[in-house]
Image (cartoon, rainbow, N blue to C red; front, side, top):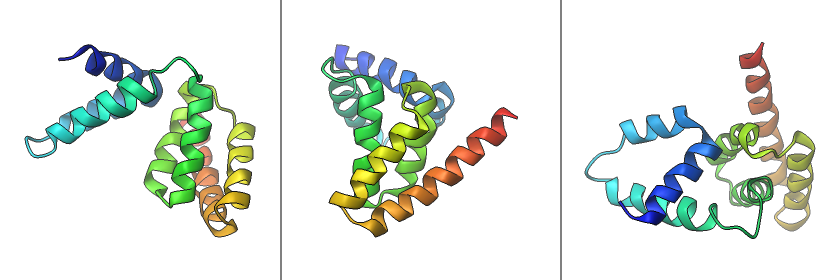
Length: 127
């Protein structure tokens, strides 16, 4: 295990939560293990572990990019991660407003729907 892998796994768990990471690790196979290592080292051990932006800021950027690109499952996953990153509902609303202007209203509309549903599920789980 490299230092970047260890750092990435620590950051990934801090952002996505142990339950999510444990499920992903349990589903890892020999086929996708190199890809999973790439994600842990590259996305989590390099980008998310960087010290120029906070996890809150990275969360907002990530959700906006995923929404703009139509990666709906990932939008929901990262909305759930806001519980760990400190990005508020208002932060995400503002990020999605940027999506509407710079990537299109349909992309933002879809993401707003996903965010509303995901936030409702999160609230129900707390109740």
